[in-house]
Amino acid sequence: MAPAAPALHDPWTATISRLGKSPTQDSKLASSDKCDKGACAARPARRSATAERAQTAASQHSDAVITFVERFGAKSISITWRDSTAGRYTEQLWVRRIARSRGVCALTGASIVRGDAVYGPFSRPSSRPRNMSQMILAEQLDDLE
Image 1 (cartoon, one colour):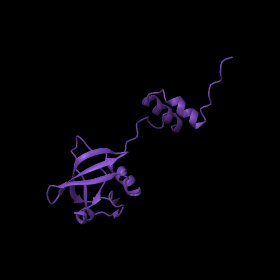
Image 2: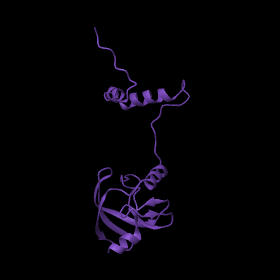
Image 3: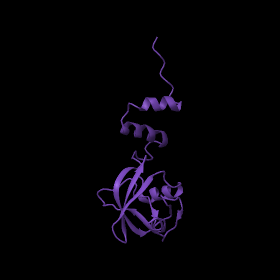
């Protein structure tokens, strides 16, 4: 007798069965569960920058280890950022700007409101760091120096 096919209603069994599938097969399976006869197209989920900032603001401050390295001028500093989820950035350039959204200070956990002076990672459109949505209150850094 051949062994019976595993029931895919158990979450653990469903996870194990999906391990060997490609991401496109997995998204087709997930979309077929949610859509009625082509009512929605199978497409990968996209997160906008606004959604990332909202998630960051809703969460508590990061567990990153932040080390001040050097001040280059009135509006730019260098820090080392180590985080298990965003990676490690050695001597990353951060620039002073005005917060465009609410958030949480990555250094202290203090609330950031729109219009506060903050430091954030410098980026180019071609290469955005994973910690791009993080902010540090400028007054907190200025007090440390």
